Structure formats: C-alpha cells, structure tokens
Image 1 (cartoon, one colour):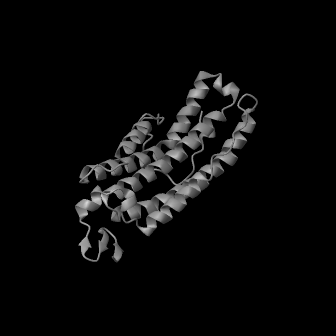
Image 2 (spheres, rainbow, N blue to C red):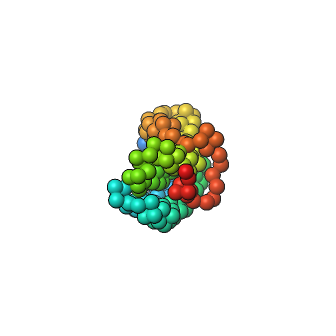
Image 3 (cartoon, rainbow, N blue to C red):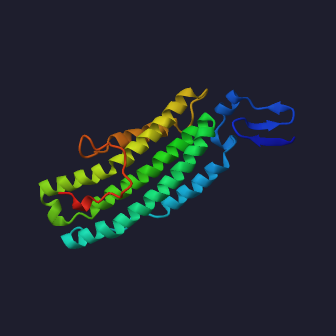
Length: 215
C-alpha cells in the first residue's frame, strides 16, 4: 500500500486516511516529523557536544585567575553556546508551529531543555570557579551568586515560556502527550531557581553576562 507523508495529516495511504484525532493520539514515533525538526535535533546535539569549561580549583584560585576564567573561557563558552541554543530553538519553533500536538509539545520541551543546559552550565561552573576567599565571605559570595542568577534570568524566562507552550499544547490535545509530565517537572525545576533581583526577569539583552564584575 502506497503511503505519502503530508504535513499536519501525518500519513495518507491509498484507501485509508489517518484522521487528525488519531494522529494526535499516536506516539511521536508514529507521526510525521518535519524535516526542520530533524535539523533542530542536529543543532541541539551540537549544543550538548560542547560542555562548559573546567573551572580553576576554587581552593587554590586567586581572584586574578578567577577573573581571567570568567572573562575568558566561561564567557567564550557561554557566548558560543548561546548562539547554538538560539539557532536550534529557532528551528524547533518553526517546526512546532506546524506540528501535531504530540510533536509540538516535544519540540517546546526540547527548547526548554536546551536553555536549561545553558543555565546550569553557566551557573554551576560560575559557582565552582568562585575563589575560596570569596566563599568565606558571606556578603561577597551572596552578591556573586545573585549576579550569576540575575545574568541567567532571561534564559530562565525563555525556558519557562517554552514550558508554557508545551503545557498549553498538551491541554488542547485529544490524548495526553507523553512529554507533558516531563514538561511539568522541568518547569518546577526552573521555577525553583533563584533569579537574583526581583526585576531580573526582563527581556534578554544580546550581550553575554559578566558576573565577575558584580559585587
């Protein structure tokens, strides 16, 4: 039996037609996937192939070495990774707008995951790089951590927006998308993150964060 892949209708075969309701109830593996989504996955894999740089030993690092790491390897990784996340997220979003609810929720989740990778890599590496003398000073360490989370706040907002897309799409689906519980779990993790100042969740700027200048 000859089958032809069609956007939005999943599969149309000679003598049969898969209904929209059946398509929404199908698992992602059974549904038509936009070629752009495959491209987005490739771009996403490229993001994950570049982990954050290894920070200097916090117990031995002097403030100068710390500053060099923050302004050099960490900033460079963040800037490059941010561009890769933007590229992959943009293609996922284009695919999401044409996908059935199951795939649309999955693509939105992937956008959130990419941002979470960048958030955690930046914040955790920044924490690990903090010199021991800063860690011993409660006021300095608190100011630095606030700066880290404030710098990450726009990324958190973007990730939460993707989670909202995932959940709102799931609500409209005939059958509950398999990725809906994962969207909720990631959303809770994102909401639990400190974001620095109360007004930190402003629209993102194009510049890379520079937490080393805080405090």
